[in-house]
Amino acid sequence: MSVLNIDDVKKAYNVLIAQEKTAELAFKNNKYTDAQKESWFPKFNKITECLSMLMADYKKLTGKEMPIGNCKHGFDN
Image 1 (cartoon, one colour):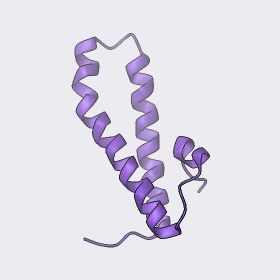
Image 2 (image 1 turned 135 degrees about the vertical axis):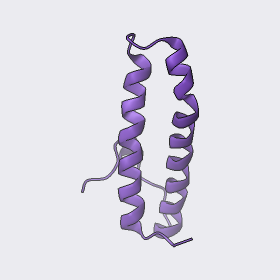
Image 3 (image 1 turned 90 degrees about the vertical axis):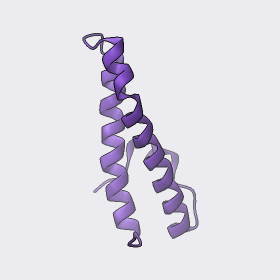
């Protein structure tokens, strides 16, 4: 397994936070059935799990908690 650097963590976090936001919009959209939405939960849970792991990686690499703004919105490129 390769060791991530801070830029890798930020890039991966941005990809996943975008996926999470898209999923949240889909969950709120009434054009999808409850059964469809329920089928997405495993992937959504995996996304949130990976975001949490990247937050921990960020802390290991920087010695600081990820700022709340970045937790919610990702990082500027």
